[in-house]
Image (cartoon, rainbow, N blue to C red):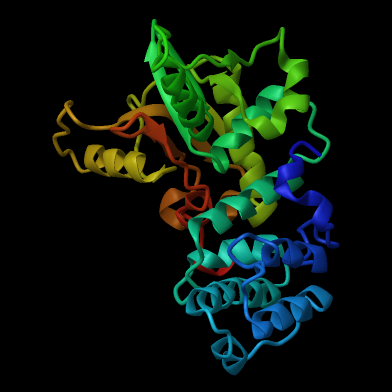
Length: 330
């Protein structure tokens, strides 16, 4: 287990390798601060909470929720129970995640979606011993801050950077200290430290082309697609797309999608105030019989971008819903 915070200890694998919607997994959501009753909560809310803790799958009616005195608490319960019902209906964490992006899917808070990806990635990487792979996997479920200087591209966890910057700024109020945030960079010398620090998300990743970080990310894309779609692909980092028959592309985030769409359509992209491509990849479909006819034996190109605020906000669902697969086989 790489990240205890992912919650793998709360569930187990089903026969197909996906994760079960277990009692303890659901209980973890019922004990979130937004849900757990406080001393001032009404008797109905306390009773409802105890009922769910005893039986996490207990049916709860709209009348049950309407009886809660605090309307905000009732709304929070409705949201979590909508999430629970979706999980139960789909039968596994993976199936529930993949179906969130289909028409008619329930609206789920983004934090819940990120938590699902975190848990699923922990499942995919069970037994993984390469720290660079584990660190690169953090891009799938945690926002990154990108720094480019001296021909280097360093990625650091955005939440960690923001928290440390705030602490440093407070210290600077009482002295001449600077506000620059420094994080250790994952390398061969400190790779063994990653496992003890994994849940702190406090190691930066060198994400330059030809460095292990991009290659690890490419391998993760392959494993993510295989885990969900049982589709074999080969992914290779690129410096640029040149002299290629560009027939299909997938942006791995909103910014790269915008940039790639514009380039594909031959539109002008102003340099100022815009994001930039952080990494490009070439994807070959090894199971080419599952690809739409016009893409058979052709590669797709993937992009990951830094937005105008120096952030990378990956959307791993794009790897499941935007590939050129035959509809019946997706």
